[in-house]
Each structure stands twice: as C-alpha cells, then as structure tokens.
Image (cartoon, rainbow, N blue to C red; front, side):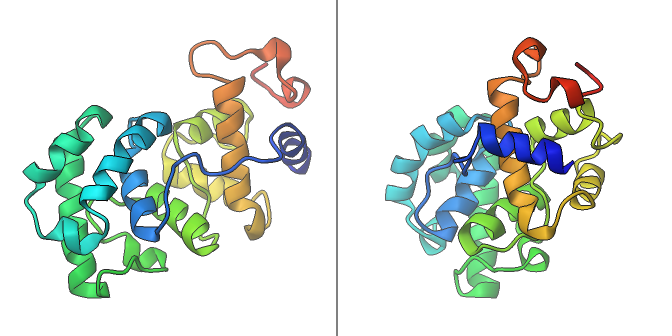
Amino acid sequence: MPEIFGRLGEAYPDATCSLDWRTPWELLVATMLSAQCTDERVNKVTPALFERFPDAAAAAAVESSAVEPYVQSTGFFRNKAKHIVASSRLLLERHGGAVPQTMAELLPLPGVARKTANVVLAHAYGINAGVTVDTHVGRLSGRLGLSRHSDPIRIERDLMQLLPQGDWETLSLRLIYHGRAVCNARKPACDRCLLADLCPSA
C-alpha cells in the first residue's frame, strides 16, 4: 500500500477537495448535494444557494420547497432539500447553528452518513476520523485489491488498516483523482495507469 500511495502522490501532488466552500456549513451542504452528482455540478448551484441561505439559521427558517429550486439540477433534489432544512433545524436545536466537530454528532443529521461526515471533519476541521469512500474510492479499492467488500463502511475499515491516520483523507483524494483521470468506471485506461504493475485487475 505505501507504494500505491506514493505513486498516486507523485501523480496528484495537489489533490484537494473539489467542492467550493467557505464555511463548515457550506461544506456540509455541498457534500450532501454531491451524492449521485458531480462536484462540478454542485459548484454551479451552490453560489446562488448560499447567497439565499448563508447559514443553518436561514435554511431552518423555510420549508424544503423553498430550497428545491436551488438544488434541482443535482438529482434527488426533493430529498436533498428536505435533508438540508431538517439538518439545519437540528444544528440550531443541538449545536447553536454550528457544524459539530465529531463523527458522533454529525451522523444524526438527516442526509449525513460517514462519507459526508469524513469530508466535513477532514477539510473544515483537519480531523481525520476515517477514509471518505465515494464511488471512485469504492471502485478503485476493489480493482486494486485493497478491499474485497462492496459496502462503503467495510471498505473504509479495510483502508484505515493500510495507512497511518494522518494519511486517510489524502488517500481518499488521490484515489478520487485517479478514478476520474484514469481508472474510470466504464473503461479504465490500464495502458497508461501508473499502478498497472501493482494492480490485480490490470
């Protein structure tokens, strides 16, 4: 695993979160919207969304139907709008409107699973609580033989065993970048993959 991690680091030295955000609240919402949607699409809708709803208090004060038009193009928009409003109300009720800094406090928020919580903790607060497992990370973990599981929580547990805690989110980012650039879902470009000699699927 260190060899894979190192090679990915050489290929993607500047790998970082692709979502645009300024506050933990914005990152939380953007990550919720990124489910089944590209970060590029999310970044197109969030400027208007955050102008209208700059914090949890603003989103908590409306019904989800008021949020829907802003997030419609991200897919599953009715559920996402409901989650944004419900999470905002819970943040006000339990945390004074602030986004908490622990996994245990984030997971009860509607629309927040470990993936979203890991992103928020790592990028907003510098806390590596786990490995963010999105579709790219899940796919590459299987192809590279890093995990035999399909369940994101089990994949995350496997990946957490392979590197020190300080590298967990960096591993996720590098796998995401490689998944986008080379090891895509439909037709992985094994002929130009820097991990081909290490990959059992190549």
